[in-house]
Length: 454
Image: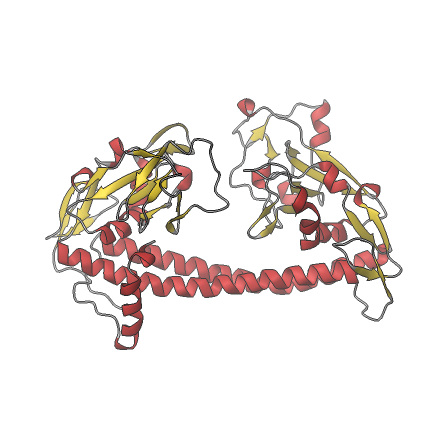
């Protein structure tokens, strides 16, 4: 799709806007919005969640406070944005009346199209400018209030152009979102297949002809007749991390990394958010140094949408010290660490422990629960064969996972670039019309109205 530029531009004087169409105006955000500060109760006004997908009824996974009488009122047509930098991108035009947390800014549009503002304020370039104007006491977490937000100068075209830009972006982003959903469905199917491969191999083995027996354990079902059933604690030890005080964390990369729960992803460790500790020679802390191949599990919120937060320490992760709320699991010589790793990454382990998770806002698993998990124990040679089989199967899926995730990233980047280009006038969509073969799709988008916006 080739989209023309405007015939004439002028310098905006702002890096995030760049050159602006000559006919567009620049005014402070406060000229177009008033802040809605009315306090209400979530008993009278339904609680809403401010997400990266817009404003929706409160999610079941959202943290709930006891202060339900101290929230901000939202009226359908208001724009709501989360003020905290760690919630970047969480905003949107609300199609619902309701209430939101006090950390959100609620804006009532005036003299500006709400649909145009929806796209402008959700553009990546505006989001960066919005949080750049914030303030806070730590480098990676700060808030932007309306007092700072209202002084941001924003680009605004005429009423007709606002409508055209909003219609163009509604249509084009809906098409991109549909493609992203297709890729996400493929990932979900791959994740289901991954779990099915693991669960079947670690409970049924690789030989379909062997006699089976009732394991006596509900979540295991029938297992090969020659396998033993035992608590994990008979075959493995657990080390929980040391309570390193956060006030003494180091940011010197020459020190030793601390392996925290936040660093444990699904299948690998992630060091984007790393802190360090100055380790002296000798002393008790040496016992918390991780070894290559060791299985580590995040005990707080052990499952996320992608799966179990469990990984094995790789050579590239070392050296690292184990922090509290993380469990390091070491099997004895009768239990293969690869077999154990796949078992703990399976849905079977989740089924076992999920009913007994402690904690409300942050579900937690205890070392005792882990050690009490009953697992089938084939002989060591069979464990090794099962581990190798699963690895081959998962390696074959990994390439498709990677390709699909890369496709999603490309689509998301295109979506972001298209929105930023349209709301800052880098492309001219005044004469844009949906292709003839997509006119029905365009009508559906326009008829959906606020649902597309949210």
